[in-house]
Length: 482
Length: 125
Image 1: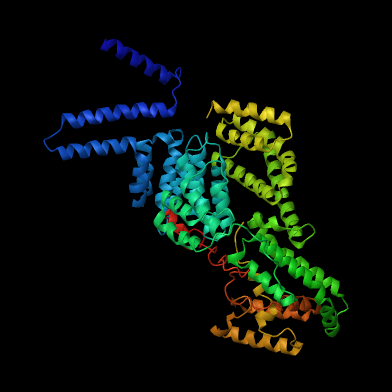
Image 2 (image 1 turned 30 degrees about the horizontal axis):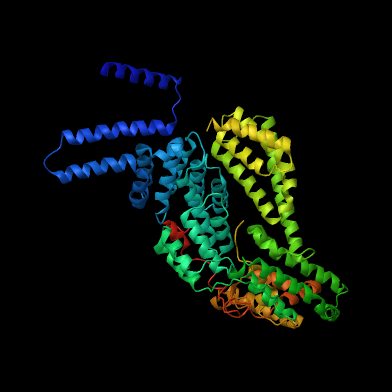
C-alpha cells in the first residue's frame, strides 16, 4: 500500500516538474511548508530530551518560521535594520500570501529594514535595486518595492506615483499586506504636509478599507470640520482598533479638540473690503496650514480680484507720477497673470483645491492652465506608447511600471481637476494604451502590467460599448496568466 | 508635484527686499539698494535676512540687484507696489470664521508623520 502511494507521489512530482500538472504557487508553498514542518517536528521529537521547555521552544520556532513569517519579519527582522537579513529571511521563509512575487516581496522587506536606518547607504539601496531588477514577474509587490526604493532615494514624486498605482490595483495583482504599505505611505505623505482632505480620500474612498488609513481618515474628517465627522464615542473604538496607536495619538488628540459641526454653514467670503486686507487674506489662505482649503483659497482670490477695480485710479495716478505712458489696464492684466501663476503650482500639487473654482474666475483660469499641461503630458506619453508599439521596443519591467504610473497619475489628477474630461481622456488614451498593453501581453509576456492597463481603461470606457467588450475580453484572457 | 512655499515669490517683492516704503523716491530706492549691496559685500550677517508682512526671508546681492532693476521700470514698480501693499498676515492663520473651531493649527501638518511608519530617514527633508 505504502509502495503504491510512493509511486503515485513520484508520478505527481514528475508531472508537476514537466509542467503537465499546473499547481498554484500558494498550494505548492503550502505543501512544501507542511512537509518541512512535519519533518522538523518529527526531528524535534526524536531528538527530544527531558527538558520540555526546550522542546516547546523548538516547536514554537518551527511554527513561526514556517507558518507566520510575516509577523516575524515585521516585528523582529525589519526593526533589526538589516536589509540583507530581511531580504533572505523573506526568501527562505516563503510567506504564503507573497508566493507569486517572492523576490520583489523580499526587496520590500529589505527596503523597510533599510528605511529604519537614519542614513540608508547607497550601496544597500543599489543592492536591493539589483535584486528587484532580477525579479520575475513584477506585480503589485514589485511596484511597492520600486516605490520604497524611490522614497529611500528621496525621489518623492516617483515614489508617490508608484504607491498610488499600487494602491488602486485590483486585488488580483497585489497582496493585501503590500497594499497596506503603499496606502500607509501615501497617508503619511499627505498628513505630514497637513493635507487632511487627501488623507480622508485615501482612507475612505478606496475600494478596500484598511484599518490604519481608515482610522486616519476619520481623524482627518474631524480635523477638517467635515459634517460627516464621527463623535468622540465613535472615534475612540476606531482609534483603538487601528495599529500604531502610540504614534497616532498626537493627531488623534488634536482631532478630539475639534467640535463636530453637523450643519455646516457655507464659509463666509473673506470680509476684506479694501485691497491690502484682501491681499492679506489671500496670503493667509496660501500659507501651509490653510493651503489645502480650496474653498477659502477660491474666496480669497475672488476677493482680491473684486478689489482690483478699486485701485485702478490709484494705479493711473502712480503711473502718471512715475512718468509712464502705459494705462492701468496693462498693470492690472499683469497682476491677474501673477495671481494665476501664484495659484497654478498649488493646483498642480493638489487638484482637489480647484473644487471651489467659479466659472470665469482667476482660479478657473489657473485650472485651465493645469488642465492644458496635464493633457499635453498625457498626449506625449501616449505618443511614446504608440511609437514603442510600432517599433516593438520595451523598457525593463520596473521602468515600464514607472512610465505607466506617470501616465495614470497625470490622468487621475486631470479627472480630479475636471471630472467632465473623462470622455476626452478616454479618446486620447484608449488606442495607444490598449495596443501597447496587447503588445506587452503577447509580445513580452508581461501579463500583470497589461492586465492593470486593461482594468484601468475599462473604468473609463463607460460610453463606448465596443471598447468595453474588447477590454473585458482582454481582462479575462489575462486572469489565467496571473 | 512638490509642495514648496507658495509665498516665497511674494516675499521676494523688491520693496520687501530693499526694506523701503512703496512711496519711496527713486533716490531712496537707489540709496537703500547700494547700502545693502555694500553690507552684503562685507558679509554682514544682519542684512542677510529681512522682515516682510508674510514672515521673514533671506536675501543675497543678486536679489538686491534684481530688486533695483525692477523698481527702475515704472510699470513694474507699480505692479510691485500693489503686491507690497499686503496687510500683515499677523499671527497664526486659525479660526478664520470665528467659530471657535480650530481649523487652522489643528488641521495643520503632522510633523512626526514619518515616524508612524518607523522611518528614521525623513524622506522629504
